[in-house]
Length: 172
Image (cartoon, rainbow, N blue to C red; front, side, top):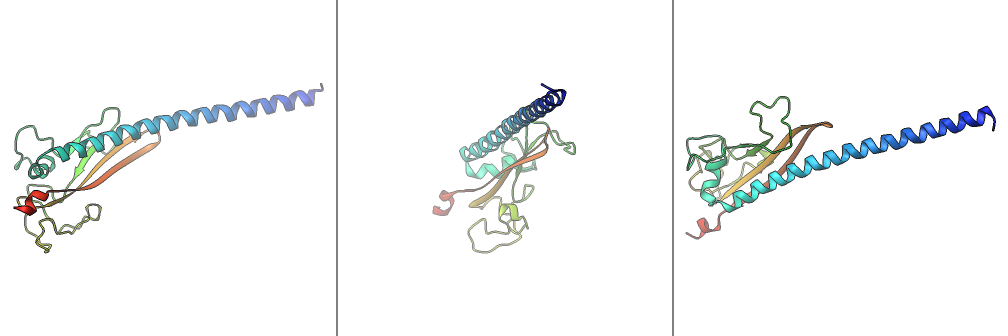
């Protein structure tokens, strides 16, 4: 073998090693991103399921930002932690999870301009969208659960949107 052949072989071997190490590092980053996303999905969907298990009349009071209408001292409010996820640098409360509702509480409003929640929308079934407080007479409750966290790949976000309803209120 000549010196040129040896140099070409070393160059090809170096190039293949670089490609393999780049692929392995990208695979490790992808696995970490998938793991973080799985934690966010699990936390958000578990919270929505917990809301489904509560009496419909209590959901807004338990998860809004106001403590004035809380049914008891154990109300979590709109923020929640997710183990394994780091808050974003601009996060003031240190929680990565947030529940978004139609109004900060204790008022439930149907005239707000929140496209993420499908508002404005009739929430009490009277076929009128007004500026009144519907915390005591709503039949629908749009909810968005959002998890925002800081990752090695930058800022990440996951959202679950749903509408909770109470059929019993319509039958009374």
